[in-house]
Structure formats: structure tokens, C-alpha cells
Image 1 (cartoon, rainbow, N blue to C red):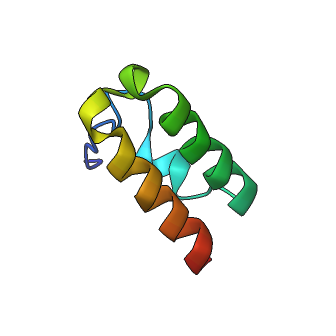
Image 2 (cartoon, rainbow, N blue to C red; image 1 turned 135 degrees about the horizontal axis):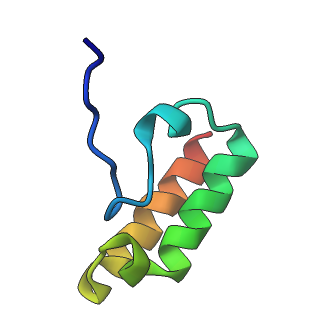
Length: 61
């Protein structure tokens, strides 16, 4: 029996597929989330934190 993994980011991201993302795909996804937070179920109040997290991920790569 296969394990059921819920979709992330308001049902927009299959984590099994995301696991195989290349670095450019990760960057593109993060940029899209920052630019369209509502689509991914993120409150406008959380965007500044999201931008900071994205910046740290890019810096640490």
C-alpha cells in the first residue's frame, strides 16, 4: 500500500515531485510563491517573512 502524502502550498505542490527539483526549479518555485502568495494559500501578512526565508535559502545554497 502506497503512502499518501498530502499536497503542499494550498494543494499546488506535490512533494514527491518537488524532491526531484533542480536548483533553478527551486528558485523559480520560491519566486512564484513570493509573487503570488494568495495562490499558494499564504496570507499577505506573511509575505515579508516568506521573502526573508527565500533570501536565506538562496544565500545558503
